[in-house]
Image 1: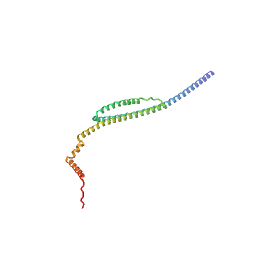
Image 2: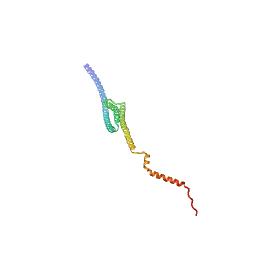
Image 3: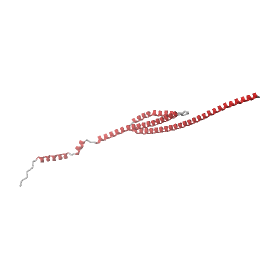
Image 4: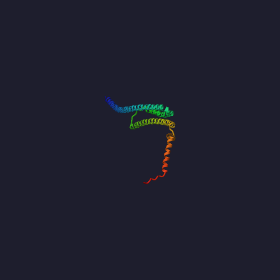
Amino acid sequence: MSSELDSLRQRIIELEAENAEVKAKYIKVMDENAEVKAENAKLRCALEEHEARFTRLEQRDKEKTNLIAKMDDDIKEIKQSSANASSVENPNNVVRLGKLEKMAKPSNTSDSTFNSNACKPICTETKSLEDKETDDLLDEEYRRKVSDEIRQRKREKKLQSELIVQESSPAINTSCITDLSTTSTGLVTPPEQVVEESIPKESSAKSAIPCESFGNKQDTPPQKIPEF
């Protein structure tokens, strides 16, 4: 009887020890579960931030493509109008415009490569302060590149307009000079001929006679006045 009680007591002690181990494992699992939940929440926040950033980049990419398309349309219109205006005056402008188009092609390729790099998928990882700083630097670099590309397009546009004006103005000046030279050679008479034609021979002879008589009057001595 006492042996059975001792065995039961021993069994109870073992069960209590096992129960304590199970409770410790349960507490440990609960702690790990809490850590996993906290990490999951952080990952969700990071994922939302990455998705928002990706949408912003897509929006900027769309705005950039729309702006580039608009600038391309404006450049095409300017090229077409300038080609129509300059083809009549000087055919060399067509060659210049072809060279400008070839010069503008590398910038378009750089735009396409930059767009492909901007549309790459973003890895969803936890963001630290350094990651945020790098993201800010990337945003600033992106804005700077966009502004530089816009300035480059404006410079090319200005150069095209200046070349067109420089090519068109000499042709106009030369045509005006040739017209003036032809009209002047055909109409203007020398001044000596104008003077000779305007003064008749008789009037010149008459004008010479009074001068001689006036000279003779001065040469004759004065007469004496009689005394009364």
